[in-house]
Image 1 (spheres, helix red, strand yellow):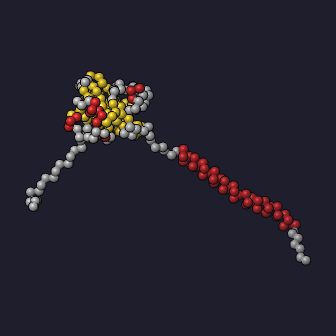
Image 2: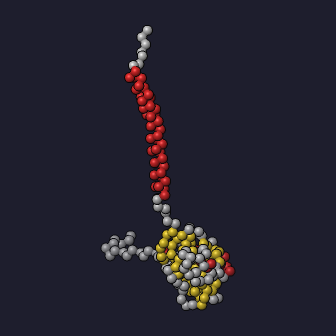
Image 3: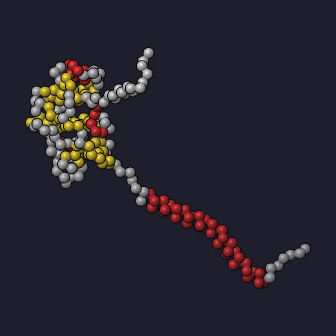
Length: 224
């Protein structure tokens, strides 16, 4: 029977060939794990430098200044409409909250009974705050400054304050002056309830402008 006997030279090559085979078997996993580690490091860097969405929106609105009000008997809003009512200098006034949901009307700087009173409403976190109360013929200069942390920002003289906690002296930038106006008593209720308690009240309500009727064309055919 024929038997293969490797020559001495071939036997000398067996060890290097076996080593190459082992290296080839190990090279695949090594390359795989090297690429995976590199990809993981790249992902960490990408996550580290991904810009985060700002949690503050800055804008400016002076709000409504000394708006017109109407007597209670001329109001056409529903009795269950929400309002915030104030009593100032012997006068009663209610502010229609649905009228204050627009950005331009979140802040109402008013003068009631010879006193400066500002009413604010943030519909994002359903927060109503009133400020002022000092005798004045001029309204307070409180403006809407934007949004932060899910709530509304107010501004006075360019300094931003959190609406919800403004009177406890916490400007957004702590080194700046505290909020200059005191909290003012305000009652959140319904129009029907407020009017029954204070029938002499008046009401601030935003009246949307009614579209004017189109002018008739001089060439239009007469109606039949």
